[in-house]
Length: 242
Ligand SMILES: Nc1ncnc2c1ncn2[C@@H]1O[C@H](COP(=O)(O)OP(=O)(O)OP(=O)(O)O)[C@@H](O)[C@H]1O
Ligand SMILES: [Mg+2]
Image (tube, rainbow, N blue to C red; front, side):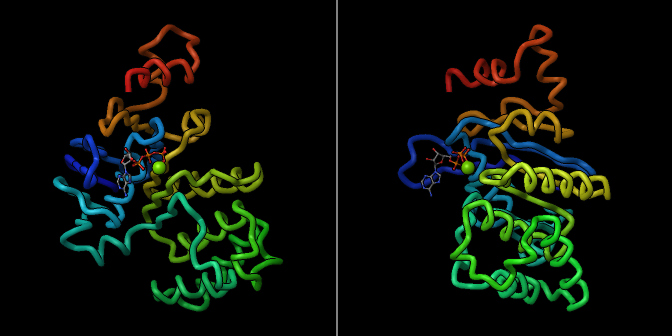
């Protein structure tokens, strides 16, 4: 379960609040989609959830553990995929995955089966011995997803995880998210692809200029507009004065 309570953040020199009094709750078994225009505050919110950015006020609880007051236990609860996959470029894929597995004290047996399973599903079996530096953007993105999931945490937090993925990899990731939520876990991801949010999410949060302007199901959002209105039109309508 993910609980965000009245999160607020202003960056030094920022004209306005990047995130303004944002509260959101994602239950176990739910996939939540985080949508909103560029600069709306999605990544800032996600970084506050993961402890990378300190909120000015408000709190975050992950499976009940406060990210500020009980950081270590809170950090054991989640996987995080950032919006940039260009990390640890000098390491070979397998070195990177073992490094993450070591940090989280994943047994040899568990890591081997997870790495093999994910590498097969993401078509990376042949390149495990290659340095990440040599990879395309999408390949790096797949490696970061594998690294995030190698310790099998219950909560997944993914910042624009589909960017750069080919249709097969995007399908695999959506399948993994569905399986994970169906097993009773929480998944939160940001996206600009409204169709993905519509098809995949039990719940969406729409943020505009740092403020959550809608929380609920896509059906509820669409229900506020004449039948047949395109999602894109709804999005543009809500965000036009941002
Ligand atoms: N490190 C930073 N220093 C100063 N301002 C920042 C910083 N990071 C983000 N901001 C500002 O905070 C606001 C929210 O940015 P954020 O990256 O959270 O948006 P986003 O919704 O993730 O956008 P995108 O869809 O483009 O990824 C923007 O106005 C941005 O300029
Ligand atoms: Mg972002």
